[in-house]
Each structure stands twice: as C-alpha cells, then as structure tokens.
Length: 360
Image 1 (cartoon, rainbow, N blue to C red):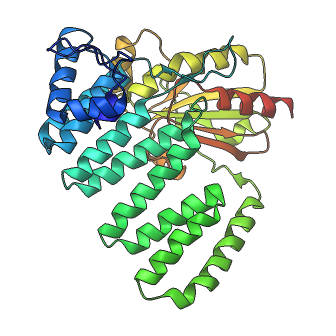
Image 2: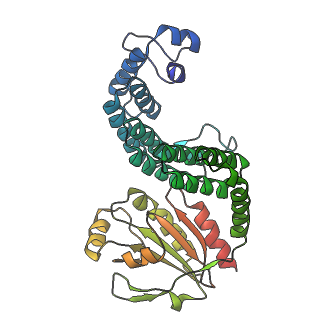
Image 3: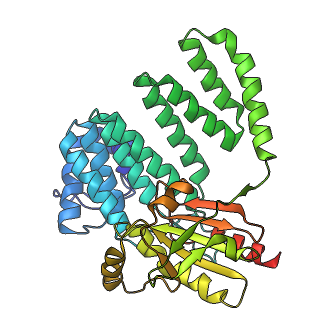
C-alpha cells in the first residue's frame, strides 16, 4: 500500500515531501508505516486539496488494511460522491494522440471500491450489487482504455463471492456471461475448477462444448422484434409503437432520482435536435408520475425536448428494464438493434447506431 501512494501525495504533517524523487519506493516503504501514510493523506485532504480523488481512494485502501472498516466505508461513499459531482469524467493519462485528451468515467471505479469495502465488512450481497453497477458503467464508458479488463475483473470478483456464498449456480451463470462476452478459454478453465469443486468434473467437457455452441448460435440469432405498446404522454396524447413503423424509435428509460439520467439529458437533446427532420422519434420513458416529472423538470437546467411517457412501469417491465438510464433503439422494421445501460459521460455509441439506422 505504501508503495502505491509514494508518488501520488505531497507533504505530510512532518513536512516530508512524498512526491520527491529523492525517495525510492523501497526506501519510502522502509521509513514510513501505514499509520503515518494515512495521517499524511488525511492531513492533505483536509487542509490542502479535499477533492484529490487519488488521495481519497488511497485513504480507503489503507483503512481497509488497518481494519478501520467504518472509516473505509465512509471514505468509499465520499469517493463515489466526488465522482458523481465531477461531471463523470477524469482525464485519461493515455490520450489517443497529442491533440486529443481522452476522458473516462471514474464512477465505475468508485462502485468497485464500494464492493471491496462491503465484502471486507461481510456484506457480500451489497458487494455483488456494487460490482453489477461497476460492470454496467464500465460497459457504457466507451472512452475508458482499460474497461474491457475492468469488466472481466469484476465478473471474476462477482463469481468468486458467489462461490464463497455457495451460490454455485449463480457463479456458473456469471462465468457463462463472461465467456459469452469474451470467448476467452481461460474462463472455461475457471468453470472447470467449479465443476471439480462440486465433484462433477466428468461432465465438464460436454458442458463446455454445449456452451461454445450456444454462444456461437446466439451470435447468429435474428434481431428481436420490439413489443408493441400504447401509452399516453404528459399532454395526454396516446403513443402507439405500431404507428411509428418505418421510423427509427429511441426509448430512453430514466427516473427522477437518477443523477446519471439528468446528466445525459443535454446529450440526448443534442442528437434529437440534429435528427428532427429525419424519420425518427425520441421518447423519454419513466415510472414516475406526471407530478413527479413536473417537479423534476423544475429542478433541471435542461429538460427533455421530446415526449415524456410517465407512469410507464408496465412498459419498463415489457422491455425488461431494471436499471436506468437505459436506451433502446428500434429500427424501421420494428426490430431492437441496440440496448445500452448506464451513462459514462457521452452517448457516442447511441449516436452512431441512430445515424446508421437512419441511412437504411
């Protein structure tokens, strides 16, 4: 832990410049205890730079190591709050070119840290929930150079926790999902271990062959037709999906308590404005009541420029939407061609899909 923070944080209360190149990691690790490093970081975030995200995260890590579980939990929650209030982006240290500064969301990282703390505190259920949130956000963060590795790592962490809870069927399902997304034979090795631990090793080869066939067949499945629906918008006008066949339909599922939902509104409005003359309709779908929507709008700097569909719990159930924000794109043939959950600072993938479908 000491080595990890040696070059990230400035002066301690004793006046020691931790950033100085005079101290190598080894010397630094020999000279200072975790307690002293923690004291230094707490002093720094309190008196010098309270929103230093690296320092906040390292404070949590050291508190975990020192078994200060309550402090670690408070620190992890503070870290998430800092990420949520930082417009979802952190400048990447590896830009694509000198002229381009890469941006990536650190919100997923915050959920990953909360999962680690929850697991250390013995709350495995909450840890799994946080890992699920991290996975969703990493998937939506197209500019994160390391998101593929992070997604895989979080699936593995989730499966490991499920195994410890003796939820072997769920662990197997998690490994299956990971294999479907990566087609990495190393995942099959993990599944083989699971079969061995449950004294079912003789059935692994048959299972692995079946899984590979299912993954291959799934990639060849035809597009799924979107379920028809009829629902009234905020003005009482009835919206029927069947009446919009021949046009692209974008469904944005959101909620009034969802901060990422509010953050992505300007981005959605921009695409909506740019495509208004095209054969496309945007619909903002929410389970909230009209009164809740109105109160939400009064708090926002910018509200949806397109139709809002309130009281849409049944519609969310039909489309199996459990997390928000979720975007679903339906093509001119009425087929679902894109589904994305979460918001990582941009909606470039959604825009790309929309523009491609409009050309068809």
